[in-house]
Length: 239
Length: 219
Image 1 (cartoon, rainbow over the protein chains, first blue to last red):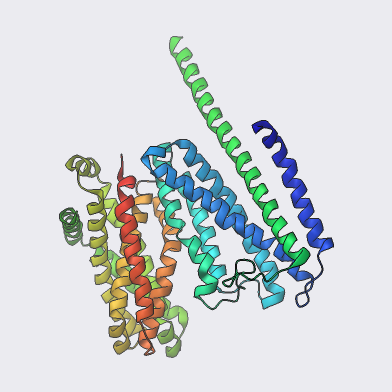
Image 2: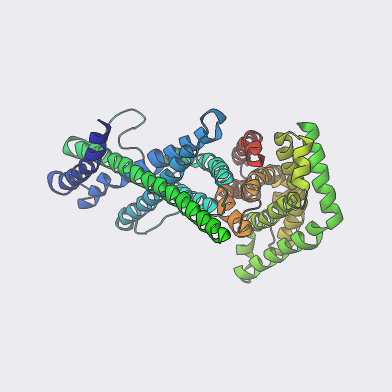
């Protein structure tokens, strides 16, 4: 079952992404006011969902698990590290797709809007997390410090989420999870939006799994190369 | 915890009083930065007065970075860490003490920078006095955040360059709230809304520090 899910994950992700592209570009009609530009709605919110909630959320939960003595393990630290890398990629993609939509709509590539600025700050925090990891050679110290930093940085996520409600922003409010629970998107457009969320969630799982396997192999390689070096030194000493 | 906090704060402040790094290095750096900000804005007095609150907080952030590095460098001298570990001091108390010492140093530097802001940038004296409560709380919050981030980078390779990367994004909300509050005081608006936000941030960061400082100091 496990092997089957591992083998199916990649093709399933590619098929769902291809379906999203086909439905987003061919099946759905252009928007009445925004025209073809509205098709970005099948990409941008799903990417932001992965960046903010799935990846950053996984990194935060894994960091909390590391900080809690009962669940402390280097696996939690490695998962947090891998999730944060995936998060950084998707935060950058969120900002890029947002800018592509912002230029024709607002007339600028970048606006000092609360949602945009707080998202950019989250990106800087993710870079900071990775920089902090590189600054430490001791695995335990590195894991402990990065876990604390990830937990502190997670304060930004609810700020980003509620920024459109707390401040007067250029960025539009919620389309699906509105305050009065009424959908602002219908028909094939709503289904494509839903499919895009499924596709990008699968992509996140796929990427995280691949990145984690790479991290495992790197650790094994480091350990074995250290053993080889020690063995060589021993032989040199014997001669 | 409070006793440890007072003990650590007293120790840090005594070291500062004897070394006079604050007086001869940090405060002059802040004043020079403020003068340079005034020069960068050009000769129009009105723009300087308008930009006054923002520039005050910008310079304060730079000064805070210097102070955090200094505050944690004290703990890195030979034997200090092992002595603290042997004494079995409460980590929460150590955090509160270091944050308190940093806050007192920031308040002193802040007063000098505010005077500089009134004299050099022509910020209104009446508005500045009205903004004082919010400035005191904002600088306290900066000290709490700074103490946590200082401990995160202490002893790392390239800690001097890493600290700004980690701490400045965390300072950003405080910069925004502090600047808005200061500006509101200058323009005769309500300062309490922003003051409340900064107070919530102060309490949140103090709680985070009390909970997490022990993890950072584990050996």
